[in-house]
Image 1 (cartoon, rainbow, N blue to C red):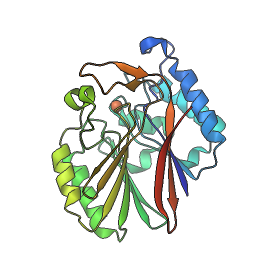
Image 2: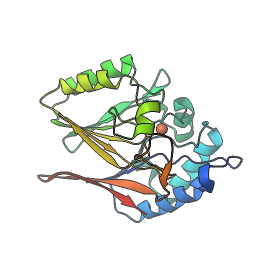
Image 3: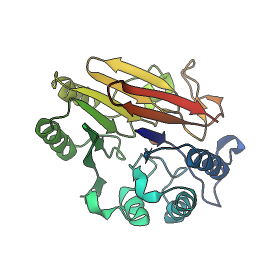
Length: 248
Ligand SMILES: [Fe+2]
């Protein structure tokens, strides 16, 4: 089974100008067309669909493009900090799992538990955390695959670690590490880098953006490069999980 992760597409409205003259609409279209050519079973768009301030017109434009090139029924969406959960769910018809303006749910796929979290407010709130623990306890899956916008760990990207790291990440780590008989594969975006952080039974995969990548060698904000990317996640029966980033 092949899953494609796309993240931090930061689509601009027609009145907005992205940093560095990047055309985020064109980047999005190119990558969606590339993904359409790559056989896959599921795609997950892990947040920050909007450039900066969430706008209905951006979600509607994104929906039209995705619907044109891909099977939209095989796409999962989660919200990032540049999304507004209610607006995103209204635009994509996702009200089914909307609870208190937060969008999270699980699904069983090929013996794995898939979890989709909402960190649009920069945190996995108490209600969501309690629900997550119940879902893990009641699932027989040894390997659990989580999609969440914010990495729940530091990743040695000083600008992001110091300014935009997930709130409550230590509690989140403690809760998941207490499930010592489970392995958590956690797929995130938000950091605009390619990173893997393995920590006890947590493996956190951070996927680059289709806007710009952040330079991790300096403390201040600096763009590293403008190559766009998506992630491939292959779940192979008897051969484990293989994941890598593909640059366009
Ligand atoms: Fe973000």
